[in-house]
Amino acid sequence: QVHLVESGGGLVQPGGSLRLSCAASGAIFSINDMGWYRQVPGKERELVATISRILSTNYADVVKGRFTISRDNARNTVYLQMNSLKPEDTAIYYCNAYVRLRGASYNDYWGQGTQVTVSS
Image (tube, rainbow, N blue to C red):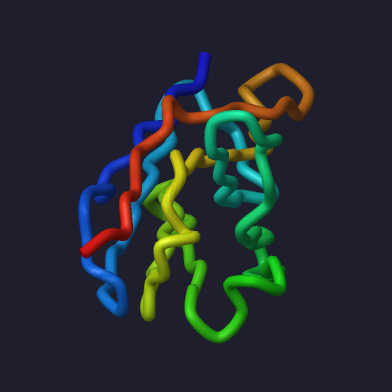
């Protein structure tokens, strides 16, 4: 099995910054895309940003220029640097990874989520 453990969420004032981390562990052979999604109550989970193994990135329009996704392949870890945060960024943020276990095919895995609250 694969475990994705997120950290770095919390309460921040508008205009502030937070950095989320997500470390994958388990019998991992390789990880393809990694990414961050977010969800607020009553709404569908939405893409925030993704990054491929060769560091190609993709962002939702609403976070472009404010958020930066990065990863450390040696540590199986993905990061999300969030700057200029707005109240509408408040959500539970979920880490996602497309992982191949040893002797198996690729599958999607999700973290447990970390709360980000932007409020004065």
